[in-house]
Length: 204
Image 1 (cartoon, rainbow, N blue to C red):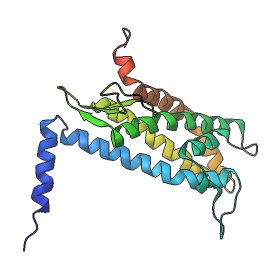
Image 2 (cartoon, rainbow, N blue to C red):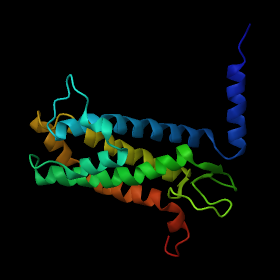
Image 3 (tube, rainbow, N blue to C red):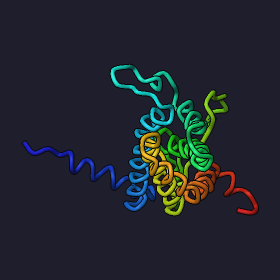
């Protein structure tokens, strides 16, 4: 018996298209999520390297830490690294914190379609309730998604090099060369995290 799941999937896509979730936006959201995932899954190995820890045969210290702890640790760098390398790691941790908020809003937020590019709203007080977790938002306009993809790619480049930073001197130099990119990504990620505020600001 022929399965109907391709048709069902197409029907879901058709409904999303009516909400202005265009194929281009869906593609870019997917590219961002995948690229951020590459950063996130490489981050743990980078932390082992930065801390000079051999995890073979033991439970990694990172398993007991939260994702925010991981980012804080990334920003701390290591005394064994150059000032330029530590600068990039510190800036990368700030970029990642902002970009994580944007990602969380997409993954866990409510899709709001009010004409034009939809937004995702996370933890809104729909009924006047008090929330423990902070609110967040994510715009799906193509330029914003481009900022997200570019920022996530820069983060991935940083931690990919950090995975071997203690064993390969070239990796440290590669991280240092990423300083202009990470500074730019910091601006991008900050704009993504505060897009709604900026949109309502008279100078935006």
